[in-house]
Amino acid sequence: MDENFRDLIAIQQLHATQKLAQQVAQSNSKGKPCPYCGGDAIPNYERCKNCASPLSWVEDHPCKPGEEKRLTQSLAEARVLKEAQEKRLRKKTKWVAVFLLLIVGLPLVSFAIVKFVIVRGIQSDIAAKVEALKSSESEGAEGATPSAGKSKSKDD
Ligand SMILES: [Zn+2]
Image (tube, rainbow, N blue to C red; front, side, top):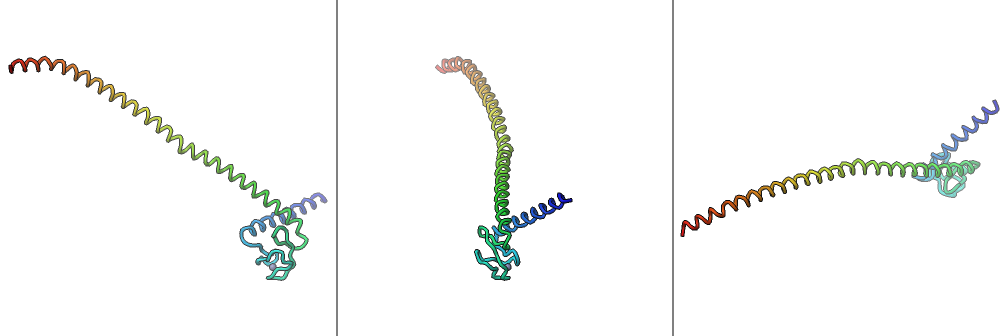
């Protein structure tokens, strides 16, 4: 029973810390909201300009007096969370880059190899045909030379 009660208090404290961490995260992007009315709080003022509630400050973040310790804890937690998120994002980005490189790079490389092989095949085919043509031409020329000489001798 006593243990359950302690657990309940621990859970409540955790929720309060998480709520504060959320507030801190939000206040990082848009001003510093008063913990009572949510209006803009002027840094290091002891009272909110909107609702005149007493304020305490931890690292430019307003809180209710007595919550300084929890806010400090929340700020540290928020930083750890942010770092972990950034780390995860960096890791994710790295893997996406590797994946994209594989997706784009592999077809390009295989296309280049296939193209090279095909072009080489065509080139050697052409070379063989040219060679065959040349040899048949030279044979034809050898056969034609004597006849040309004969026709020349006839003219004389
Ligand atoms: Zn206020």
